[in-house]
Amino acid sequence: MDYDFSELSTYLIVKRYLSQPDKNLPEAIELEKAIRANLNYNDEVDFSSFEVRDRLSKIVRKEKEKIEKFINITSWIVIILLGISFINRISTLISDPIAKFIIENQTTITIVSILLIILMLIVSVGVLRRSNLARKLAIVFLAYKIIQNFLEPIMVKFVYPSLHDLKIDVPKSIADSMYQTSVVFSVLISVVFILLYGWLIYKFSNQEIIEEFT
Image 1: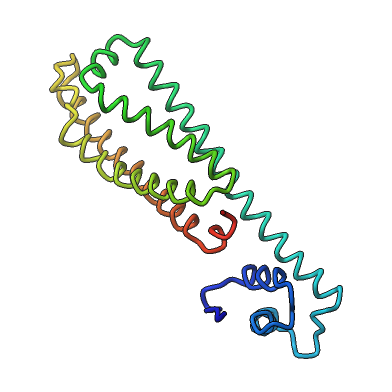
Image 2: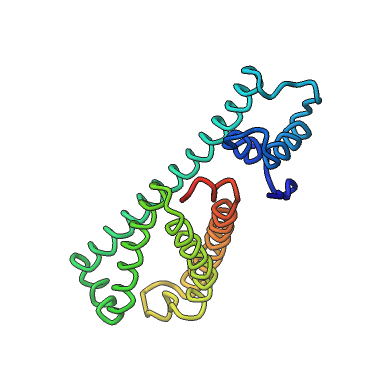
């Protein structure tokens, strides 16, 4: 099997080499050559020695720990944030009369939002269990969040009324200033989250991460 070593990190090359049952097979020999080149090992280095194999094992173990820590921390952060969001949605429905009145006119949107939160909680648990389907669904969800954050500033600007439009007893200059500030703040927050979600999509699409899922 031919590998495009320009697309593989040293960690993946070493990991695949160590998984070879027979180090005399052409694939193992090819991987060994790549390791020699990446780690500056000359032809005199004996790959059957304990010292070399121990060093290679440490490379894999150390990188694997970093990858697993990233996946676990990311998954738990998502679970916590989704849990807070879910509780907030439910509590709003049952305790806030004004919000409840507004939401009653958006029942479908609210139900879909709650179902999405539940789905992503399940997906996050799947990511913790290293399910490849969950990883793919997480990427789809992150792409959805990018679109959502892109649209939010537009919603603030063109859909939601200003304080002045709501006829709240606030001077027009202050109301307009607060409204413009909310638009700018919404744009900045959206940009931050778009960059974050884009980075997470990149990480979850990385070959090193993919190989940790089944």
